[in-house]
Image (cartoon, rainbow, N blue to C red; front, side, top):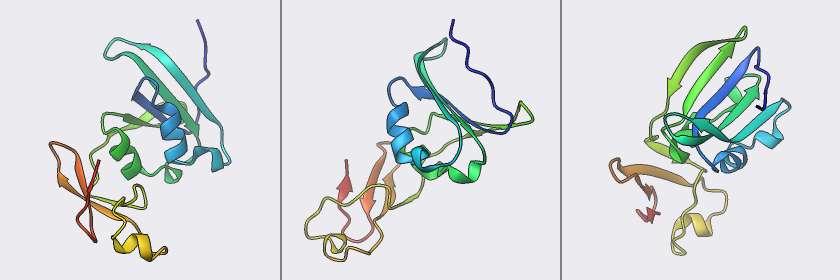
Length: 140
């Protein structure tokens, strides 16, 4: 059995769909942070069969919960203080996404104006559909 030590202060992202942890690592830019990050892939889970877990030592400030909610709103965010789970947060689909996804419409203003932020709004929560704020293009 593999043993990964706990963390005193930080964040544990649990219930990540198996195989998705590296996508989350890239989206959250965890490689740019000056802290310890442990990725556990394909851990056994009673609830999911297999799951990934990411442990991040340090502050929650470094983690964009909107990005995380967009990637997978079923992830559990455990905030660790003094070696214990101090708080559990559930994620939701964010109403607005800014500079997370990009508009694919070549006629969109964001294709011409490079410094314009890519802003998408949640159009259909049930089907998880986001649309570009500028041109209304559906993101798939």
